[in-house]
Length: 367
Image (cartoon, rainbow, N blue to C red; front, side, top):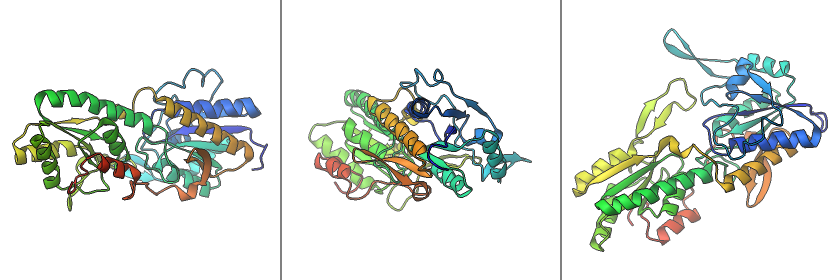
């Protein structure tokens, strides 16, 4: 499609919710309405709305006053997939290809392009839509910060702040009762969230999926602190952390979800092992979806706005099938086909790991 011929743009939010989604919706819609008088169509509940033809035109009023709001005014789904949509039949989950139906709905609404806001799963589906001829612009969203192609995703800063505040609050009760306190933090198979929150909260031990931990090393750190009069310890543990040679802890299997395996419970398991080993009282707190909710931080509001404006600029310029990204302090774009299906994990030479070790934090191996 040539630049300047854009008339109707769809926008959806896919995957889990994250602080800053509404800020992106606002920025995309207002930029398009202001610059080119382009009509913006809100697609409800992510790709489910595309499949079921549930859409509505957004007005200026719809996208005003939502900058500071958590969640998404459009709704979202982490299960819908036009190419492999989970459907329950005779008590079993089957995956149906509803892509033709989806493409017909896009045509019915005369959508010239779609802005897809989401993480790895959303970008993977977006890549397949691109392959079917749908012009797409991606916007990187995930509290896990594990999306390839961008230095940071919006939602991450807010989630880190919530995690750090939780550790701050745990700190006082740990110190008062002389306990070992574990705080379990989301992040799936990437340790960015636990690492950031652990550093910000001053955790004594930080465990992430990228570094398989050793129980001996963790217990040695706790005992070392006891010898110098620190009768409590705080352990920040990513939900995807696992012992050397061991497996992750799975809380449940959701068969009709794109991400069927749901992690959770490592803090409880590890806490029991530490208590058995040291005879010291332990307590575990699983933050869970607390990290997703509430108002975004100022940083995430600004980043989400920059991403939304960047997405609108790409649309107006006719530069489709790209994802906006942050590189350094600049908003750039990367091809969607380079993003979907790839995970950005914490590298061994990460400056964050070096900083944690420099201040005496144990990373689960010989400290």
